[in-house]
Image (cartoon, rainbow, N blue to C red; front, side):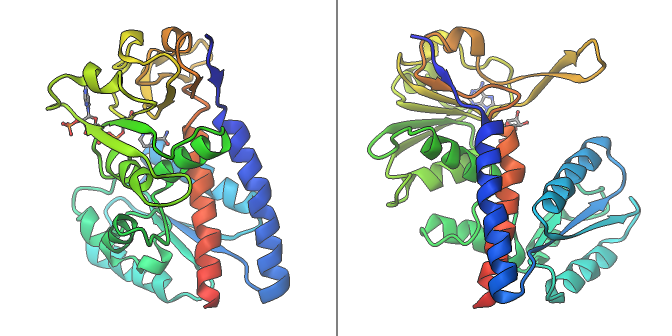
Length: 293
Ligand code: NAP
């Protein structure tokens, strides 16, 4: 069997088309334009590139978008004032503070200061708590993207054995929480694995759906995958440079070998990655809709 490759680039395009329609509906019916501010502190090249991608997507969807760049030596108090300003700004529905922040700033304090109704990254404890009890307004973007990939590729989650490799707060734990909910596109039996898991392969081999977010190149090899499993590779590992001088990327799964036994698989790049920004846009549209109430 050769797996069907799920292209996140295509699914992301489909969702963005749907979002465009929602944006025009909000403008026509309520006179609301979804507003997103991305706050960037300093000039870390990876952060600049992420924020640029987010701003580009926001503009393409017709959002009111603001790129607020602050110097690397900004004080925590000043950054908190800025967050507060956007919390009170009626034209802004989503606030994204690009991480990591410089050392003088306590990231947790800044993230906690964002109004949960504008927390389109879905990292505020209020939103993570709501996710836990099945009442989420905003799902964290990468896990939300993974769920959409599964739904739109027709992968049945209901009753499925899902194994998640990785327990981070931004991927592993939230995707496990999303898929265990009593809800459409979820209802799975979920196991979370990590570096203290005794026999990783014994778990991964049981998975109907295997989600890998370990940040270790080729941590999952073909012998660890049940034939017919759906494999979602979240990992993004830089393994050198291309001849054009771009970073050469690979996932956490041995793609070439695993695609010969899986039923569906996501590539790296072009799998989960393109979904993350799209789900940020989707959360911003949702925040704009919630503001109507
Ligand atoms: P992280 O915070 O470093 O967490 C990695 C998790 O994997 C940890 O829980 C760790 O266990 C576990 N782990 C590592 N090696 C393992 C192994 N050999 N066996 C079992 N468990 C192992 O990483 P993250 O932020 O979740 O990100 C994971 C990967 O996804 C990274 O490559 C990251 O770049 C990528 N990512 C991609 C996107 C996207 O948009 N495509 C978004 C976010 C992250 P312990 O807890 O025991 O240490």
